[in-house]
Image (cartoon, rainbow, N blue to C red):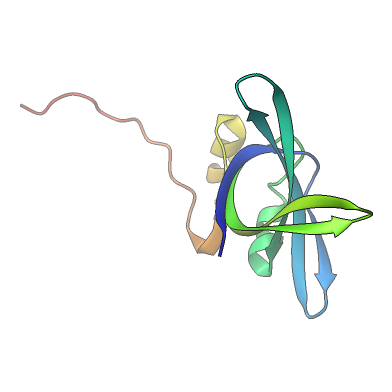
Length: 126
């Protein structure tokens, strides 16, 4: 298994479709690529299978910053090679959107509830 974690932005809204007996949610993630001299962008075609993908699809809209983990792969189409990731975990990142998702009872992958946003008391107790 080639496990990969990427952080980027969605290039379009997620789409859920039938793939035989199961449903698959597909989306694309653009990741900045900087080699010290030139800046570019890598695009990953992501697929999330089953109910988990269907449930999270409504939150995966164009421009949303996400972190995605899963199995790295490639596919060929018309002589081009595309990077793919079979999603094991997806996390919505920062901003007001993530806070509103938590308020709506958004449950992330594997049924884990989104973390609550609490004030942290930095005072030393002694």
